[in-house]
Image (tube, rainbow, N blue to C red; front, side, top):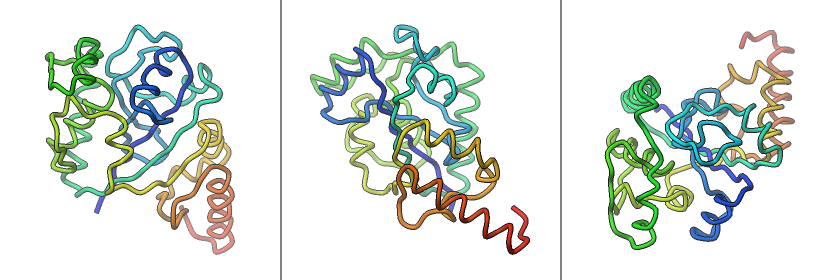
Length: 218
């Protein structure tokens, strides 16, 4: 089986606060990643982390986000899928990235979410509705509502996921930059069960050291 990764993001800000109060949970943004370190991850969100009013389809840049939101918290979860499903998702994401300026944030759809009424404007999505639609088309997830009504809370409550990291974005970024070998080690080798924050780094470094002592190649 292959895996895809859903990252839940908690960032400060006025609009983030409104969304947080509406869905009543800490994490108000979701990102779809192809690897557990979010080196290749995409979402419908801010084109520039510090400018909330310009949004569309973008590849996530953890380091730029960290500069704009040094106190951001992340939770990363894995979802199992077949290799064929992941290939389909990867192709769709990269095609969307190629045409990213055709995608926009579904501002008009927000009131319909509150009213629980499906609403879709071509190429306009929220962060969660885009991922919900793509995962349903890939056959990975099946929602009991129209994709336009799926919120980060639905992903948070999705049962067939496993938490593999929860902590600050600074911790996640530092862990990879300080030990670049981690990028070549599947995350499920580092953690059983889910880890959080600095526990991930300690366990990851220990795993790397053990490999080096045995002379194994990463």
